[in-house]
Amino acid sequence: MLVVATAGHVDHGKSTLVRALTGMEPDRWAEERRRGMTIDLGFAWTALPSGGTVAFVDVPGHERFVPNMLAGVGPVPAAAMVVAADEGWMPQSAEHLAALDALGVAYGLLVVTRADLADPQPALARARAELAATSLGAVEAVAVSAVTGAGLPELRAALDRLAARLPAPVADGPVRLWVDRSFTVRGSGTVVTGTLGAGRLRVGDELALAGTGEPVRVRGLHRLGVACGETGPVARVAVNLRGVPRDRIARGDALLTPGRFRATDLVDVRLVGDPVAELPVTLTLHVGSAAVPVRVRPLGADTARLRLGRPLPLLVGDRALLRDPGRRHVAGGVRVLDVLPPPLRRRGAAADRAAVLATLDGRPDLAGELGRRGLVRAGDLVRAGVPVTVDPVAGDWLADPGHWRRLADRLADAVARHTREHPLEPGVPVEVLRQRLDLADRALVEALVRPPLRLVAGRVVAAGTAPLPEPVARALALVRDDYAAHPFRAPDAERLAAVGLGTREIGAAVRAGALLRLTGNVLLLPGAPEQAVRVLAGLPQPFTLSAARQALATTRRVAVPLLELLDRQGMTRRLPDDARVVVAD
Image (tube, rainbow, N blue to C red; front, side, top):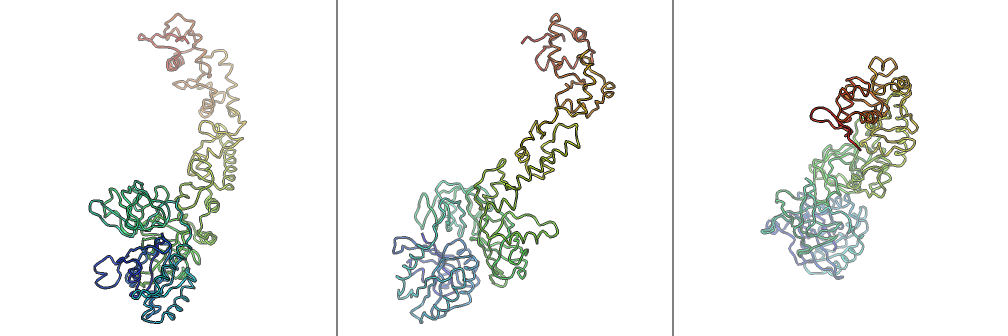
């Protein structure tokens, strides 16, 4: 389907032309028909000689209704510039053309109407010259009379040729249907209309409302007034939504494929038109069918940051238009360069950002995005319109290869430095490294661990690191004779301190598994429980705490927590009279 928006000065015969081509009345309101002037968007369609279909979005030409005109032109791929032969080029002809140029509309036709009232050649020559300097360039031109029918067959043939020139739409892409009408049908509920430029819609599909993200279900579809179960691009569609009140969705909203767009209120753009430095602080941004106020912060000679009055589902490469509603002036067209711009907090950040933006052309570029960001979530890039064709390094995190290598080097340096500064600690906690490397996710730290580093119990340890820090190992060697002579007679705090086992050293030994800590800060060797069971198994069963203490040649301070540990581990079982038995294997 070819979808074409009309454009041109008020009363140059746009609606009359659409009516003559389609036999349909594009003016929907009684007020429009009474005044003979289009106020809001109109819609009509007809068959072409090839058997294809052309659908028209008829827009108002009066300067007071330019926002309505932009809502109709924004989502469509082609335009018909209409100029009357008897009046020629007029102020709204220029503003409508400026809007088309700002939006980057590159496909269209020039139609000179009312050829029965005046020689069309002067108007044709002037309009050709005006269009040639815009994104439309040299377009095919047709002179017609809607009254006599002259030129209408030629116009239909030209529309067929225009349809053949348009690039193929992306049928398998995500849906972003900008809403240009919203109304209620008795017995059906809320219905919205728009131009489907990409993706497919099916009855039963779940979509998301751009403003709130809430899910909505497609209850029914109409394509040019005919019910259908599925439709692809490009098409004029009406979508019946299930369970959505009429007041929840209006012109300027959008229906989206879930998870494929991110609503943003901050974008960096390139402007073509008025000098950025001369722009007013506040303008209106027109994109799709939406119109939102924006605050403009100039960055470079032709780049700026826009703060939107409400979030919109924008993508890298989107075309939009900035307009000064007070002066009724098109300030220029913008191309979206970044929908995830970094904050500008430090001195000189704006100038640095301008230098980066100067290298961007608005085309999605995965390698460039990774190079600029270093690390970014894959989902964020997909929702920005950047295709992701590389594997994540951790979770859904993508990394620039050079940045990832540098992070790995910094991780190794951080581990080595921490080991020198904290010799009693067995490695570096992952969370400490996350903070030192200023990473957003612990999974990134774990993914960076490469030999000779290794990950042990939430810590990063250098391979070849001694199981015990050297000072701890030296201190333990001094008490080994104590344990050899009396394995269940735990050294007291004075003895431990004398050999150099303070609180930090004991903690390191326990973490390394060189000492076993019982309740009450009783310290034994790791094999003490198994050795104790072998001794206790030789006692008459059941046995008392006193008998166990004597057999183990230890004190009550050690015997009580040791027996409690054996109970918890299932090596012994405590009886109701507080005696115990060894549990056979």
